[in-house]
Length: 312
Image 1 (spheres, rainbow, N blue to C red):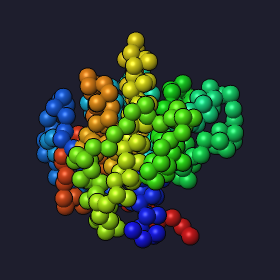
Image 2 (cartoon, helix red, strand yellow; image 1 turned 60 degrees about the vertical axis):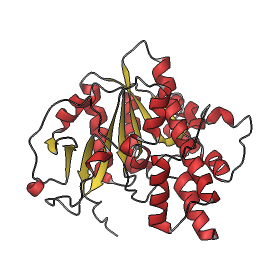
Image 3 (spheres, rainbow, N blue to C red; image 1 turned 30 degrees about the vertical axis):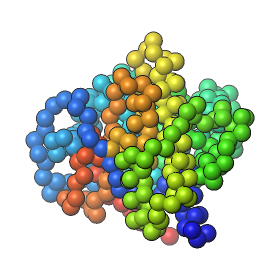
Image 4 (cartoon, rainbow, N blue to C red; image 1 turned 45 degrees about the vertical axis):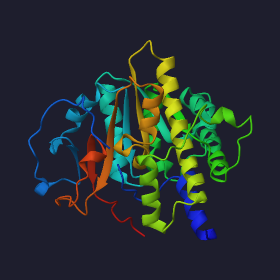
């Protein structure tokens, strides 16, 4: 494998996934209600569909449907402005509707949970928080508002992602040291299942990679990230089983599409937990109709247009 290809694979499993990954899931049978089929000829820039019925939903209708779930996965395209505004609005509306929330974030790694907690509690300044928490480069425009809302409303944030250094070690086939294990999942696996098939197909589509030993190692790193996030979610649910708190998990949609990845790892740990998946899809411009609808990717889809070009 060439050095450039290995670097590309390493960026995929050990860093934010900025590429648009297209894969995905069978809708949950627990969703209620029927909507009339929508013809998106007059689509706004952002709209929501129920993937079971092809019906349009207002935000309030979506939030009502999400109330029955223990875990809500908001699968994102990491750099989409409208998508992140939608995440904030879902969290705000769910909180206003009386839901007791915790916010799980792929965007923070498990070893900075203490810094996250201290910032939310007002024990450290925002400057101190940002200096030690390794925020993603798009934190100011895409995630800060969510963190500040959680801080203002005393909502916990779960820093769930596997630290990048550990993800790199796994991708290189290394065994984690005892002191590193505290920040990884207590158990992880990388089965050759549908998730593997999707992973290989996606990597082939982007870079022409094949299923060799290096691919297996990078897949193991991808799964380790899913297990780390899943464990953060389930540990929180178990610890707070005395109260009806639900977790809203923010993650790249590859981690949640088709109910695979992190979703499947949550279910394997707590089989009775109910999860709902929202994915994100792009349309070329407002008023256009999606050409290919993969309704089986999630329970609901947010349809949005690309970011507007920013002034030079």
